[in-house]
Length: 457
Ligand SMILES: Cc1cc2nc3c(=O)[nH]c(=O)nc-3n(C[C@H](O)[C@H](O)[C@H](O)COP(=O)(O)OP(=O)(O)OC[C@H]3O[C@@H](n4cnc5c(N)ncnc54)[C@H](O)[C@@H]3O)c2cc1C
Image (cartoon, protein in one colour):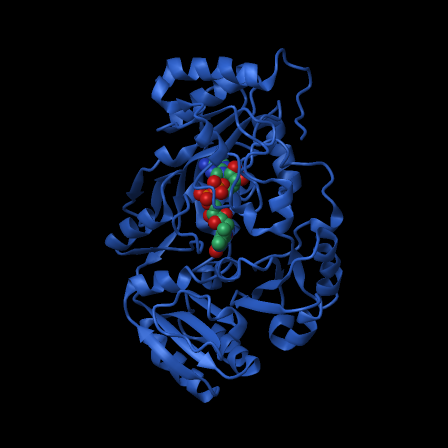
């Protein structure tokens, strides 16, 4: 893989990392630096195994770091980056490692920075939450709810870190109302640059953009302030339908509820049996699952019945809404893969109205069994198009067919920074002049057919 250092540093990456690691052990204490083989293997990959394409290209163990560092504070991170800069050592930030594009894979070795020790959480008087980058979103949500606040959005991997969600994720529960991580969710960020300064700086408002969804190539985020709403009472509603059109008719109607749902996920029968729902789901029926605000539940139920469906359950328990969230976004694909280890499934992320209006045409993008998991979004649904995997060419061949239906397509089978690329490049010239942060992710010319052209707004 590539890095963009201008003069070739002396020694191998492993040798330089050993020098930097010794310096870091002196500064932070030896316990925070590890070369344990099992840990290095764990830090060598993420959930890219969900993609059969990436499973072949970036499997665990192929790109091993030379050491893992576990800082506890933002100042620790700044010192680690200073030592790494001085010894020309690549650094790959890492939260919980649930990213599914291989974007936390340390292509050039060096240091993996395990940020989970930066786990402070503070609910501010204004209602916003300030958290260390390594704080788990589950813990942030508990603290926010205890203070009467709802965090705007969170992914179906709620156990992931807030820094990883902002660094590598994009959308989830709450997105119907609040959009993606790029839509005002992040109010301010404190960043440690890889410029030899050993300092951090804070940016706010629109200036956070170069640090969102860029896989840490512009700096390591050490603390974030995120947006919240006054807490609402949420209810987990399960509904079942005999056919796709009846279900999607209700699904799309939810956009005009007086209070938007926090989540609304729709699945065909093929995906239903593998969902770990709290209530029994009929495997012959289509499943619609809604996190509805309490005052809208009777209206949602009425629409389900008027649309020809049946209400399976409405559970007024916040933990049940977490359960619904954990069956959203990429999770139904994961559960399908888990339930059928004998088969190889891949998915493509697509956005647009064709999922509702022309599902058969979407399914024709690939041969064999093709299933659509659909999430309600601000203006058009997002879907995971799930199909049998044959080879990478077959996966890519479907993209123009999906685009011909007016769908935006994001291939989850590549690891390049594919949003705000120019902004990231321009910012990294100052914040990472040696190209040491997460090497191989900010590339000059990603293949056209794997570029992101999907937006959640
Ligand atoms: C089954 C499944 C379901 C998923 N559902 C969703 C979903 O609903 N919505 C969604 O958006 N994503 C989803 N994802 C993707 C993933 O869960 C999110 O991207 C997640 O929030 C990543 O958090 P993490 O702590 O695991 O980060 P990691 O995977 O450790 O890191 C993600 C990226 O951010 C970088 N990074 C990590 N921490 C920092 C930091 N402090 N500063 C700078 N860069 C950093 C890493 O280098 C990496 O490039 C899903 C993944 C799986 C496997």
